[in-house]
Length: 588
Image 1 (cartoon, rainbow, N blue to C red):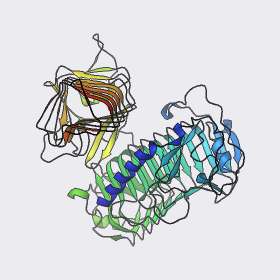
Image 2 (cartoon, one colour):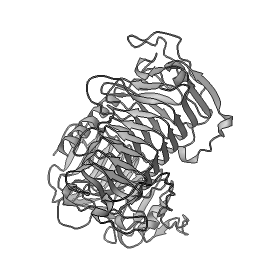
Image 3 (tube, one colour):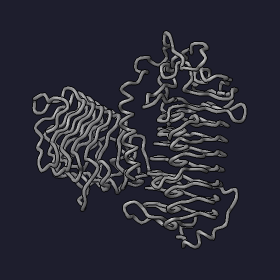
Image 4 (cartoon, rainbow, N blue to C red):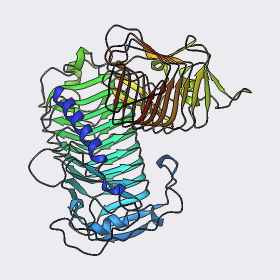
């Protein structure tokens, strides 16, 4: 656990540093460098040509309507440069060559297309394909490889894409010494993705790493020799691995072969898992409706076979043979939590001996149940121009650009939301945390949440590792006249109260923020953030914490009973407290 956290923290810090040096900020997408310098050892060919810029920005993944396969343009590519140039919507890219080394491409790390760019990481550049729909990348012959050299990079990352198919490809990091901190395929905010008849291999941390994705089908695919696991999925739904072969997952006492959190409607079916060493086969935290069916689990070494919180794992027609389980079927959970027991398709709990006696079924089919969707209150404003809500479900359903939400008097416990931790709306999702999900409101403009006064309304969160309310990529936010904090339970917190990431023009006014949250208000990479007339008390690490922000204004706040420094300011510009400019790099 300690090593895992240290790796993640170090990697995150290195990524932040690398992003500040990203060269693509100096070479805008769609422009060709005057003299692209080939990577050492790469044969200079022709300068990559910029594709024609679309007349409109690509439609977000969830809203795209793909063209039928017959309408796709087919492009045959025998070089890595031709492959990159061909990335576009409504396209089938047929790879006719043998090997495509992304890190040897002409213009590697410097040239960006309309639908791809490069992200600068600690030891090289990562290919990011974004905003594309109805794209198919297929191998014309068996054994066609897409590889990359840097160990901190995912081989390919997809952002905000939909209806993308990868077929017949072998994908991984180049053979070499050392371990990886990047996955093979990573997908963020994607929908309707297909991986078919591929081979995904380590040293990548995960074969598939998903965040906020809907509907991924991985069929007939080999996932082998990854250091952390075959699959990591968070805040996702409809993730199905079918007829896959998983092997050689490296020994890691804190990682599972399949790790899922805050997901719904996912499955591993008709698949083989062998010769793996991990904490568990399946680790599911706040995962509703996970189905394990028709699978052969043989010759593995696990701490336990299953670990699940809040919702059980359904096991049907699986064979468990010659597995070494150090701590029994359910292992030893972190923090001493007891795992939910596995159940059969009718919801009956298995005895341990029954799991060992199950017989293998073949050609299992599975249809995910309908997800628990919060009742949607019509988003209509009253005569006063505000949307009046009285429940958490109504609050979540009303989050929209330009909305003013008025919280009627009462306590709004986020844990009471229908689909808590699993259902994600268009404007919010649940972030996985160690002890439960945290609410994140994302990508909303000009949203106001207000009430009749902080003494009349309280918003609470139960998980101690989660922020009470997080906001990312938002603009024009206003929070007014509310109280927010963690539920009053024994123990200390590792999460704060309000957290802002990449937000602009946001205001917190006339609120009351309390511990055990570690910080009252924290912000990263924000502009024009104002906190005024707000009480912050009983937070363990401080009242305000801002990093890489510009234009922070704090006015006449009532701060008391705080542990640690009241203010922490790092890498910020134009920070004022009660009208006085505060120097960067200070804490007091």
